[in-house]
Amino acid sequence: MHVVRPALLSDIAALETLAAVTMPGVHTLPKTREKIAASVERSIASFAAHVDIPSEESYLFVLEDGASGALVGTAAIFASAGSNGTYFSFRNDVIQQVSRDLNISHSVHALTLCSELTGYSQLSSFYVRDRDSAGLAAALLSRARLLFAVLAPHRFGDRFFVPLAGVTDANGASPFWDALGRKFFKMDFLDAEKVIGGARNRSLIVELMPHYPVYVPLLPGDAQAVMGQIHPDGELAFKLLTAEGFEADDYIDLFDGGPILQSHKYALRSFTGSVLRRVALAKSEFEAESESEADPDPGACRAAPATYAIAAIAAIAAIAASGEQNFRAITVTCPAVESGEFVYLEQDAQDALMVAPGDTVICART
Image 1 (spheres, rainbow, N blue to C red):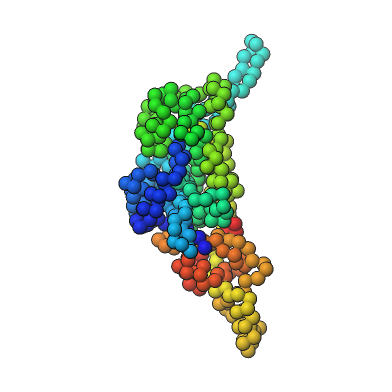
Image 2: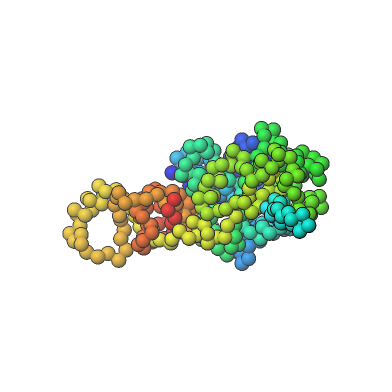
């Protein structure tokens, strides 16, 4: 069983190992131990903070293999993008041009520097080891941070976005950057990323990037071809996020031209399809039948059932503990959660979530 939980100081060494395997230009975690430690410390402080209005908080989650205890993935969510500045991106625009004298009218695709995503909550740092076989574990990791937002809506905005890595080669070179950003920054893509630390809210972006629309047809063909395209390492995240309800096409990243997915929270499955349920203990069919035979009055009504036999009507669901300070999320097979007051969990699932019968959890069908 895999468990998603907040990152701890004791995870820093394992996070450093995970960060070392990502490709150049594909940004998930900081690359140095010092920066990873700072990210974990900031996350711990954010979870502990009393929040009225989302601001500079960031929440880092890890995916833990329950059998081995090894960390096999990470995901994060920032409460408010650009909270200490302005979050910049390129907006896809269409400019209409008309000449009455020549009787010509046509549309031109243009990119406009904008700050419209400032204040949105931002998903980031998604990485899972062995992504080709990650399956339900990857889906749990991606969704868990949104389930945390469902449980603590006061910590986040009403809209969310996710920047995905754009196309780069094995050396980290970006066709989009070479055609546009390099002209203004006078440096290679990876060098520019190091200068700004992966951020998109630095003042030097406004100081150096063009403030006027960039006409896409004037860019080289290879740069146009990669606009809005995803790095192969980001395809899994893209599939999970679009299944969640995120949409692309409106914005792209300033540097590598990768897509930026965005959505209102009430268009996301985690917000519209999750339900609160009370925990009850599930038992195997054999155990349930044994109890039934021993029960002198099996038809008697019980105010709060303690057990439920796992049956053929079971479904796969993501379950998250409702406490903000001890957040946990797992994927289990259990009776359908759409109706009824209870969710029936076996003891190992309750232990993983750190809950007991009667506690409240949030459930979402995968």
